[in-house]
Image (tube, rainbow, N blue to C red; front, side, top):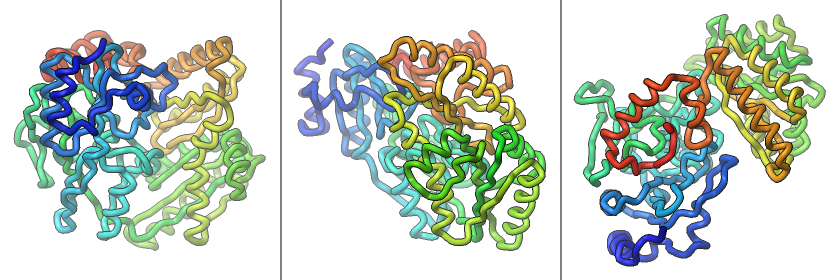
Amino acid sequence: MAISPALIKEFSAVVGSTNVLTEEADRQAYSYDAAVLSPVIPALVVSPETQEQLGQVVKLAYVADLPITVRGAGTNLSGAVIPEPGDGLVILTNKLNKILEINAEDLYAVVEPGLITATFATEVAKMGLFYPPDPGSQSVSTLGGNIALNAGGLRGLKYGVTKDYIMGMEIFDYRGELIKSGSRTVKYVTGYNMPALMAASEGTLGIFSNIIIKLVPPPKAQKAMMAIFGDVNKASETVAGIISAHIVPCTLEFLDQKCIRYVEADAKIGLPVEAGAILLIEVDGGHAQMVEEDAQKVMEICKKCGSTDIRVARNEKEKNDIWAARRNALPVLARARPTTVLEDATVPRSRIPEMVAAVNRIAEKFKLEVGIFGHAGDGNLHPTILCDRRNSEEFHRVEQAVDEIFDVALKLQGTLSGEHGIGMAKAKWMEKETNRATIEFAKSIRRALDPKMLFNAGKKFV
């Protein structure tokens, strides 16, 4: 359904005609995200430049009964920013990208939702401060999108994920009214904890205007290493061993042999291509001696569990090479076949060996090429299926394999998603993880904050 010229004129009056995209060729760029789902071209795309404009756009759209999808960089992997068919409106936040304040005394920053994550982290670091969340998409993803999906990253094991750094925010409700919650103070119990509710809400409850983000002092010492294993099971058992020894590395990442070979063929950084798996580990802290002690304990556990070799980074270049291996895993795998199905099954850390073994069994059962990498330290694995969606028979096997991967994760007391979100891609499995009463309870909250269910319609709960 087309949006009336009169309404388009009203949007143009608010944001300027150059910030209203009406041509199909322009709108097509906002019809998809990184999920393997069919695109939907929005009826209209609007790009506010100020918070005031954002509120007015939301009010206009809601009165006109337009389904509203807010989009940052569109890097998410769950279909969470694919517009609603028909008269769906996409609101872009990429021009709302300012750092409004960095307070080095009280350790917080105030930002707009369209700010790029890596840009923010870099600016904060210039002031001797640290923003730990580091999703793999950080060079392009936005802070608003990170909050909407509760993005994680390599440092999540020790430092937590995006929700752990939200102190407060301002949001626009369906009336275009500005709602304030949270504070610049460490403690806050005035009213409901709306920032926590908005984390992982996937744009279904309100529209972010600005966000107060907690900062921390950076670690003073780090040590990175690569532990090599001839057997994938020994590597996964080592993860459980490190955690059960009550050592919490900054990062504890896993790559199986398929990932190792693809990454090495691309990057040529000296990865052990004959290894069954590698663990990439970094410990950090405020004192060099404590970091050294933790590193020694980690190496002892790796050797005890069957590591054939441990390579410790001797300088910044070698450390960067270690993390390049992990950060390059997805883009390298994505170039291997026409379609990459990246999943996000997450289990309790002690169940990682079972989950890895199950994924390999499922890959063999359905005759699929599956690489496994991920944040092993917090149980968040990324089984990555390499395929070609145009081959309907092969893709049917992929869909069957994904069903079984989720079934295993839930049987191991895990969850459908550790950091990628639910969106459209996983909504049909939500009741399997929870129950119908839980779904209806969530919907009742959603209806209270969005009576017409126009905010990111069709996402998260069905």
